[in-house]
Image (cartoon, rainbow, N blue to C red; front, top):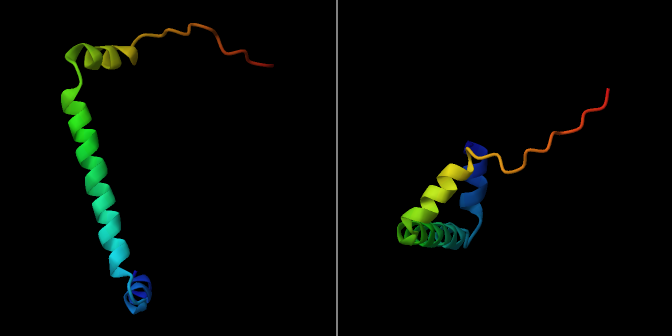
Length: 64
């Protein structure tokens, strides 16, 4: 990792990419958090239970 950090610190203007990446991460985190908090309880229950319900009961064909 020392080689990578030395190469990245030698590039001028690279710091702006760290800031932009951090801002994108924070923005996405906030959007996902807000959408999750605004979701109805019935929708959350449906998502939770959909994992346990096997709506497609087709068997996978296997060749011998």
